[in-house]
Length: 347
Ligand SMILES: O=C(O)CCC(=O)C(=O)O
Ligand SMILES: [Fe+2]
Image 1 (cartoon, rainbow, N blue to C red):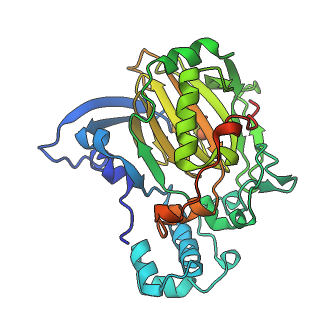
Image 2: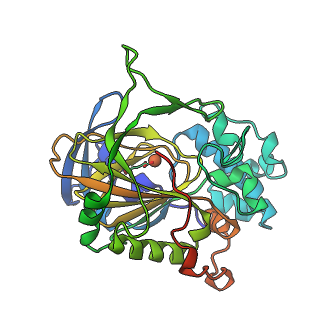
């Protein structure tokens, strides 16, 4: 199986970022945006950006990719793949695979730039399982480090009901939240302060999602849970409101996986360094990639996102590595009864 296409290539933004342009491409949008230390970026989004869908590779840095490939070599060996097949799946040399595949994940050196907390077991810390986020483990097999990585999946127009934006906007008790940062070694959260010692606030409003809040959204969540079989592995459902282009969210990572729906005006979601322009009803699912919502000064209308945090299971792990994708062998999804009874993240 060939390696996945890179997210930034598939969405036509790598060429735009590098200033190398195909004269025949049709630019549909051009936006200014600021995320990293207020540095202004300008991105042209061409037709390919709106047409691309599916599963794509994305890494925050070479170090992260290197580490991920080493872990994947081990994982794929345990799944029964041969050396050459692993090399092909990873797009690396057989020599590379030979160097790592017989080791255990704990023996793998962490390249420079990969934060230590990302090498810990998902959702676990010194206080026990899911202590930072209220999630619980569903099976032993999710405990290994390789589980951290998930490719990025984009589905355009997954939620098309126009009622969703207004229902969520009207029925949510919106609150500004404190800006938080994470200790790179332990993953612990700390409040952020400005230079005068005042607590910093996030540049957007946050809410909790409960079943019934938006009947139109409940239907979409049912569809998500059935398609991905994640209803029992969800650790929280929250919402964000960005009233206009000044609303923003600093880049961060989660120690779980994320399914994110976008409603209202189109906005950029950065995934690592790739700007993905999300439009009304689009769904993006990703792993522990760094992500954020930059300021977009030209935008005067609102956007709401609904974010589902969840944990991988065995089946999903296999999908993640693109080894076993036979739908016949997939477990059927659970009944919808318990659908939205999951714990909600406190904000
Ligand atoms: O609103 C978005 O696009 C990002 C939201 C997000 O990252 C979060 O709620 O954790
Ligand atoms: Fe997030």
